[in-house]
Every structure is written in structure tokens, then in C-alpha cells.
Image (cartoon, rainbow, N blue to C red; front, side):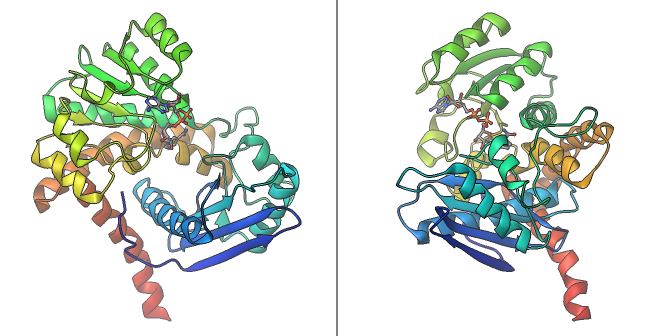
Length: 351
Ligand code: NAI
């Protein structure tokens, strides 16, 4: 969670094409490490100001996520305002594709909340600076969620070893949200011998998890406080608040959801309760690693080792948090800011 902007974006581009129904912003937070990469969100915002604020925060988060995933990419984000009136989706995304193309590869887009593979296919008719398209045989691409689940799983192995001195075999894990990532994570955990407690607002996926993984279902308002060793938030952001943290029974929090901490200070509350928090953007980077591999033309074989490296990276992060006497989310922010700044410093010196 990045509360206040540490660094203002390098560039912003206002999107305003009333004929196509396109309104929003592209934020290039940083291109220090490479093209600013981050998905395109289509969401309803009460004002342009709210849309801009969200885009700035998300773009900075992408700089940190990409830096910590060791990707040669900077951070950016596009946030489009969902039109109030019925609109031609294809025309909207083609107009967006034209805007992306004008940035000449300094911004790379992909899906995010509210956008899909078919939207990105429309974008790809106007620009090649787009990922998250259907995978070609033997190439990286397609649904990034299984890779996100795998990265979270690797992170959880390390966090559980550190906090509980155990493998995942026999450990109880509460998974909040059985969507694309949460369900895949349950599969990996079940295979590893973990015992699952699950909740989702959709009863069909809960029933499937109970049947396939012998999971115990609990109501959605109880999952955060289940009597388990590990909590994996895989649904919504901002689930970790002062009030919810006070009631957690888990010793480890490690999940896929973005921006799990409602405020950065909540990371400190977790540490004060001796709950080990695996910073979300460090462990949920598997998807962006797969998307990057697609865009950068890496071999399919490169994806798994890079996603698996999330475990060791998290271990180093816990070490530096201990050394510095800070909470893990603070150590993650410091490390990411240092990576981005290190690349910027010579640029500035040369200028
Ligand atoms: P999804 O939309 O497929 O799944 C979310 C699930 O959460 C749905 O099944 C929904 O019914 C459930 N849900 C919603 N409100 C709930 C509540 N109050 N209690 C319990 N369940 C609830 O999303 P996906 O792709 O699985 O992503 C999950 C989280 O991980 C999101 O926060 C997303 O931003 C984040 N993430 C996803 C990545 C990916 O590769 N898909 C990559 C990085 C982060």
C-alpha cells in the first residue's frame, strides 16, 4: 500500500475523445527501469479528480511492483471512466489504443479491473504496446491468474516457514475470495497438504472448493477472523484495517488482493500483533511477470523460475525488515524506491 505519492509521475496524458466515449488518464509514473507498464482500468468515478487520484496511486504501485519483480519495466496505469450512457466498447478501446500508440512504447497496457482480453484485442489493432492477449502455442500469455496464484503460494511457503517453522503440510489457511486467483491458490495449497477454510459471495465456487479441496466453508463476514494459521486475502483491497487486524487470529497474512492494507500504518499494526505480513505487491507479481514475458518476447520456460523467485525475494525482504527494524511493507517500499532511484541517479548526473 502506497499512501502518499513518494514521487510524482514523469508524465500524464489526459484522454478525452467524446465521440468514442473515451475519458480518463494515462499516468507514466516511472520509465527509469523500462517502459511504464500497468493495466487499463475501466471504472465509474464520481469526478475526473477521483479518476486522476486513483491512476496516480496505481501507477506508482506498478513502479514498485515491477521493480520488486526484477522486471525491466517502469510503472504506469491507464484509468478510463465508464461512460454513463450506453457506448460502443470497441470504439472506446480503439480510441484508447490510438492514445497508447502515440506514446511510442513508453507505456505498455494490459487488462485490469473492468477490462478483458477482448478489449485488449481491440487495443492491439491500433498499437503493439499491449499485452494480456490470448497466448500463442508455446508462448507466454493468456490468463495471468494461475501465475499469480503460484507466486502467492511461493511467498506463503517462505512466510509460514519463517513465522511458524513449518511447511504448508497440515497448516490451516483461510482463503477470502475464490475467483481466478483464489481458486487456483486453493488447488496448490490442497496439493501441498494445507487445510482450507474458504468464503466467497458466490455459492457455486464455494461448493466446488468444498468438493474438490475438502475445504470448510464459512460466511463471508467471518473469513478474516477464522481460527487459522494463515489468511490469504484474494478478493478485495483494504481488508486490513485497525478494526479487522485487532480480530485476526492468523499468524501470517499472504494473499493476492491488491492494496490489502487500508492505510500504510495498518502494516505496523500487523507487526505489533506479531502477524507476519507478506507485502501484496511482492507476492502477487506472478501475473505481471507472465504479462511481461508475453510483451518482451521471453521464452515460456523463463516464466516459472521468475515467479518461483518471489519466495526468495520475500525471504530477503523479511531479513531486511528485521535488520532495519521496520515492518515488511515498509521494507518493501524502501527497497522498491531504492531500485527506481538507483536507476534515476546516473540519468540525472548525465543530464
Ligand atoms: P476475481 O474477480 O476472479 O475473484 C474475486 C473473487 O472474490 C470473486 O469470486 C468474488 O465473488 C469474490 N468476492 C468478492 N467480494 C467478496 C467478499 N466480500 N468476500 C469473499 N469473496 C468475495 O479476481 P482475481 O483475478 O481472482 O483477483 C483477486 C484479487 O487479486 C483482486 O484483488 C485482484 O486485484 C488481485 N490480483 C489479481 C491478479 C491476477 O492475475 N488475476 C494479479 C494481481 C493481483
